[in-house]
Image (cartoon, rainbow, N blue to C red; front, side, top):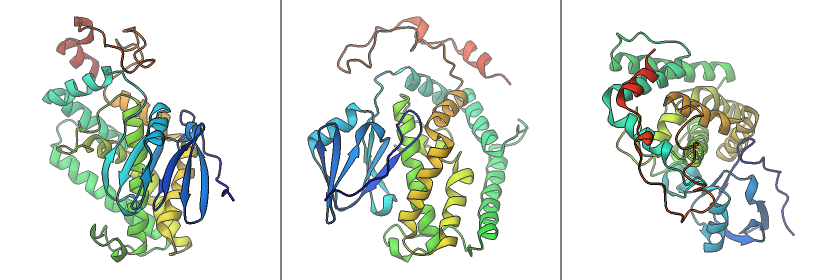
Length: 314
């Protein structure tokens, strides 16, 4: 008999993800079906933002195609979602945001302004521009330590530091397991938002040098608000099955906070992108046909550097 599955929110209205391990994923009409030791579970594709595939999972070509056509990101990851090995693509075929992101990353002045705005968003107040980057990073480290200490005191969960062994997941204490699972889901959600908006996951501003650097940049904006308190709360309730319970609790929090719309809006604001972009002024409906040739390069696609600086002047 099919198992009941809680109704998942529509991707564009809120956020949803699903972690699957030791199962087979197949296409089934306008949905996918999960086959595991307990039987078959139907999952509506249109309601899913991210599918996290853990160890022991196989997926058919038809299922991958169906998920991609519905804008669902697919992430292949390690046990409990801790390590990411590969990911699928989102639904947009437009490149303007990626080009704008690359321009910001490659110009030292513009990149520095984005980094400053990211830290200001985390702190919740404007930073003095005479601070050095190392000073700001030290302030961020202190903020994170305070966040862990406050969550520990609030929920009565002992905290000895962020410690876990990537090679031996079971050695971690319950709160570190919950944090790893929660952060993996937060990374997956941010990854889905980044890709769906047409940005590049590798072009980070604070983090650099990895294929998911920008994912880490964006996920860090929400950890103190979402994943840290949620992980401590889950452990305070029970130390049993903390990873699974942390994923479910965080999924509810993402829905409540409507995180997908927030993420894309926050990224656009951080990178200085408004609604009136060349992307929206018409190069043809490239999303309607991913194989359609792109528009030819024109000067309007590349805003002068002076205009970029003016847009970001405080």
